[in-house]
Image (cartoon, rainbow, N blue to C red; front, side, top):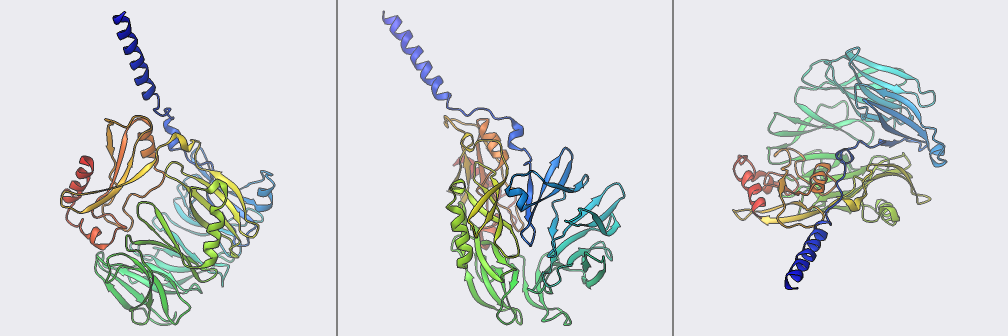
Length: 476
């Protein structure tokens, strides 16, 4: 009888242990984590009448256009505008006269092209055709000259990009600015005129300014490799411009700079804990909308009431609760918006939002996996062996989390403008967690977003303290 009781006890214990192990998530097929969305690259026409998007078909990427009227009626009348068999086709833009322009690399003819799509007829027109060695990039568009776009092209010298103005109706191409050889970025004012530039000798950077198109550029700010100034837009005050700057401070802040002498006039917004990474500026309404940064999770600070009101209304929609929300495109009137959402367990969805009616319409879903099947990405922090605080993320599989094998995925870099791990959906992390691994991501010293001191602490430490930060994370 005692023997039978022991057997029963062992059997019950085994069943309990088996039940505990049963909490393990259902194994999801590998392809589901890395699946290309059915539709992506959504944009809206300036007049707010059309939505465009990229839709893959085997080894091709296709550009489609659909009118908002048809979209709202679910009529399924999307129209094929262009096929990119040898190029992703994501580098496309709407001009202010409601045409679509894209750059294309044609492997058949060994040419790089700028192509215009006539939205009414869907006819394609080659505006520029150059040899394969000539690279072409669309720089911006100009609402004051809706038929004109600004492009960069290295036709004159393969090592530098000069600036041209292209009329997408007539095909007329005019040289605008000759690159002296060291300019790496150009910045326009509200009228589409380039009045700021960033030059580099490979290490240090210089901000250049000119008061008008007839004046020469002059240096106004010189920075070493630890400091950075990134212009955003000219203000309505004198010749001041907004910029992201970490000059004479540890954390990058949104500031106002006098272009005449390069002196900082005012701090618009700064965070004590992290660099400001992005500023949304409305070129249509000539205003700052918000500043954003990353701590454990993304943060946003609104700089005007209209933008805050739109995001507040979006967050009140049931399907968006708990999601990070980003507006990625809008019409010229800023009444209709393309909205992207995501979480750590969901690559998210895309919506069309009409602010006047507060109407939210789904455009595309980026995943077929249910979020509850995936794992939370938990922010962590610990001290390295020399006492420096280190942040990162730990993703644990569902079910029993004891004695787990751990995979460490260090981010790339370590140096550059945006090298760090951030909170959000990561297909590699979720795949490994689904297979029973804990996944550790470490923002070791030298990672961006944590200030100048933390960034420069990684100098000459590859294989040294950078590696030790990662090892300390494993020990933690």
